[in-house]
Image (cartoon, rainbow, N blue to C red):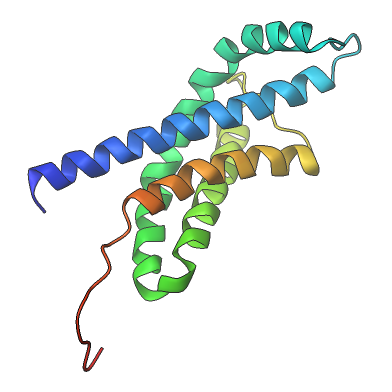
Length: 154
């Protein structure tokens, strides 16, 4: 692999982590705001409260996603070479599964780390879908170019 290709993949990785962190942080902030007894009523108040919560949520989420993506995205790439039609799904599932595993590891081994859990049901699904979008983007940007021409035996 050429140095330019390695740099390109690293840049796409950082972009995927950034997008997943922002989307996941926004989803997590809305979940936490919904759980408050005195939740903000207007859009402006909710937006201001979201901006106050994001600095607390984003660093931990970014570290968890960076660690999870460094493990799950290469696995998704290896599986995508076998199951080509489902490449988009494999990368989305890899990102969501990576965050799920990261939450389980942090919750089990580092309980003193102040990480808020996303909740149950639709709340958990909202955060996982937000993260899956970031990992899907990585899979989309790194997909192999289509081969052109006559394919005789494969």
